[in-house]
Image (cartoon, rainbow, N blue to C red):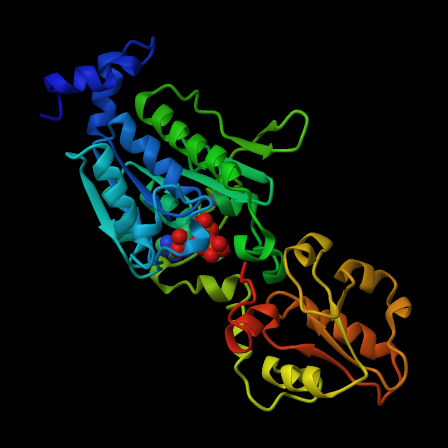
Length: 396
Ligand SMILES: Nc1ncnc2c1ncn2[C@@H]1O[C@H](COP(=O)(O)OP(=O)(O)OP(=O)(O)O)[C@@H](O)[C@H]1O
Ligand SMILES: [Zn+2]
């Protein structure tokens, strides 16, 4: 029945079928098409919702993570009842509610070098709705190897990006544009940098729209990078992309130099795994220049002359903070550290949300202070504080 519509489908898709350029033929193309969405998070949810609603014949959902309360602010297919459920499964439940006959492939494992070719090859179009550099390179290389277009989205803070890679005969791949990965400290997740939910909605919807244009033949085929800034005037800018780089190791005409995808260590290529700082909050017996949250709690109760400096932004400090802590945002501290050097005999403890920025601040002050001044960073930050000391302290 893929080459014709059933009676109900005329009514369901009529509003888009009457569009010039789409028509019955366009709707049949959507019905015959298959799309895979990698990542059922902030971008994946809205993308999946509009792909499913438009009548795509088969949709793959790949995500290894489970739903958390902090996801619901933007991952609009999930809900309070599906917390702790695999995201791919939670998204499938929501899409089945929209269309009970929808054809879905649900994969609750991560896309990895060993399974990428097999998992992605059954589909016509691939959507990158993930959030980390290793997966972006893996998706791009696999799309090139399989000769499929990759609709790639990204969003952070108030900003988003959209591009189609490996599109048509000359469209560049992700490696053509970004031959080198970002430094790990610049590859922050939404947890670290923040994200407005509606921003992922804008980009995720555009990803669905681009896939629909590609499938129905409405796309003009020119590779562009769309930059969105919610606070910008105007909020959208379009950058025309060059053709493939001849020297690109993935798609360049000088031949593929990458080797087999399953043998590539993408995590290593992107600078190695980022340490899980939160876990390190559990470390008992702190190293010399660091303090665990439990030890800090003991000191707060007993010692008179201590100072707690919180190096988060003023906005974050306003959300919650430790009693008697002083807010000095990291950038202020680093730009004028002499202004914040502790008085003699004051013990200084530096805290942030997850325990990274506080180390930079503590190192900066220690390098200027006299040798026996006590300046320590709090391991695991406020996240560890709420986990191990005060369960009523807000986690955000
Ligand atoms: N290699 C991968 N295979 C499958 N899914 C992936 C892969 N890498 C990332 N993802 C998924 O992509 C999604 C990205 O979405 P998003 O950044 O909105 O969610 P998140 O990771 O839950 O966010 P937060 O940073 O707030 O915890 C996540 O659900 C994540 O599990
Ligand atoms: Zn390339």
